[in-house]
Image (cartoon, rainbow, N blue to C red; front, side, top):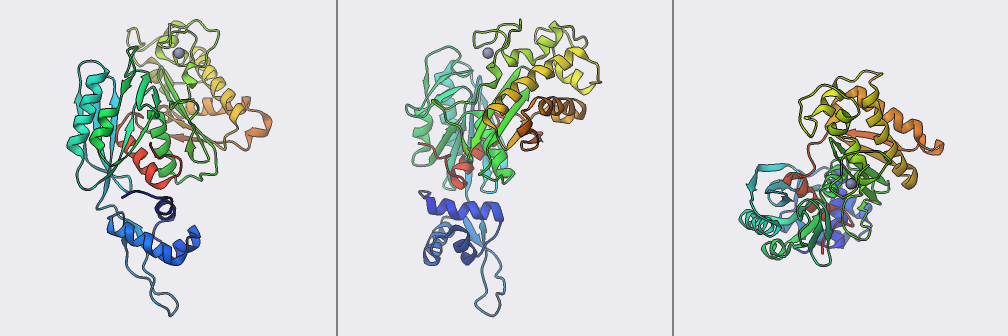
Length: 376
Ligand SMILES: [Zn+2]
């Protein structure tokens, strides 16, 4: 089935509001009543939508509500990550079906892409509707090549052609892993697409950001995450893989915390989880930890002041440490421009790693339910 704008209009309402009758859908979408009937029949035939129990309606014909069918069709999510590929199946309500299949891959980017195409080929069946692919780094949708980032690791750009070939006629949405996370956030929170969102993924030595403008990912000149992690300060850190030093994601790391006098944690070059450990045990007055959170808050505030989003979503396992979350949100609020303080809503979202095949599956769902996520 080729998904058209009319399909998407109906499906979007069913996603956001749950079961609706054809006449409700006509009112919500402004698509003519006859046309709604035709489009709905097509979706029922394809196993995307199903009819529920009829409701009595004030004397007339009982209204038969329609809802998204979780039982028939599915999307596949595929992640390509250094050294491994994995594929997961999600139904049209976003529930994981079965277990994701992962394969460890030795060798360069070409072998990784070949392995990704192979696991995808095995997973596709007659019920597959589309494929979401997440890949870290910079991706050029025009040439379907990954230009740089962890997968390419300094080698020549690599083509995702073999993945598209295996997908055959299925819709394929390729995005950065941060955009996949943003798609998942937007759909699971049934977020108002009229609201601009800045989503920041915070990890130990890893920072990613994605921007949704009008519900669409911020494309810029090349598909990628927003590079908040490489916002630079005049701070002496270890060298970042981008080639510079002083990058925010080098500052917000166990290694830097150890360097400025944070004790504890296992020894080791990366700092051995020191940042998480110290965050969990945080008490006011821990100056070195407060320095790290100060830089992080500053970086986020600069972005928020610049783009003025309605919502700032902080995604991190650090959300399990309420005291540092409080420290971070208070530092952000105290540095925001006065006009923004009461307008920007700050949300915390405890979500596992972005580069999950399941999360990539949400890219394909975004392609089905939202505007601006369709692949080429
Ligand atoms: Zn950097």
